Length: 220
Image 1 (cartoon, rainbow, N blue to C red):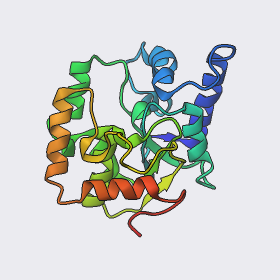
Image 2 (cartoon, helix red, strand yellow):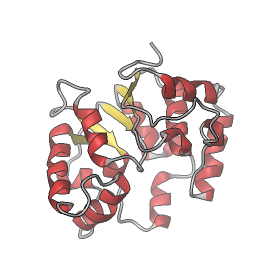
Image 3 (cartoon, one colour):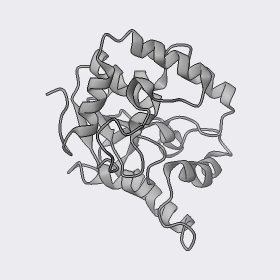
C-alpha cells in the first residue's frame, strides 16, 4: 500500500519528469517513464520501495490506466479529509511493474481468488471506483471483474468518485460490462469465468457505477 502523502511525493516527481514535455501524462505513461526506471534496480513494486515493511491498506482503488495520472490523484485527494494519512491499494504501485510477463502472471495466480487484487480487496475497509474523463473504465475487463467481486464477495462500502467521459448512455457502441475486453488471452478466459459464476447481474452493476453521482455509495 501507499499513503496519500507518498502519492503526492510521486506527483511532484512526475511533474518534474514531464516539465516541458507532457503536462498531463496517463497512468500508462507514468508507469513506463517513472515507475519502471525508479524500481528497475530492485525489481520491487513502488509501494514496497517507499514502504519496505509494507503497510495495511484502508481503501482498495479500482481504476483504468488510460486515465490522466494527475486527475486520478486529484480524485483521491478531494475525496478524503484524511488523504495524506490514508493508505491505498493501487495496482500499478502495489504490483511489481518491472517483472517479465510470465513472472507477473505467476504472482497473479491461476485463480482470481488467489490474486493480489482479491487478497487486498478482502483486507480493505472500502472499495473505491475512480472514474475519469478519458475513458470508460468498464471497457476494461479487469475493472468489471473487480467491481463484481466487490459486489459478490465483500461486505464493505462501494464508493464512486470522479467524472465519466461524455457519451450517450450505454448503447453508444462501447464494449463494456460483459463485453469488456482484456489484452491477455489467459486473463480474459479467467475473468469471464469469474463473471459467469458470480451470480450477479454484471451489466446492471456496471450501469449503476457509470451513472452514479460523484461520491455515491452503490451498495448502501
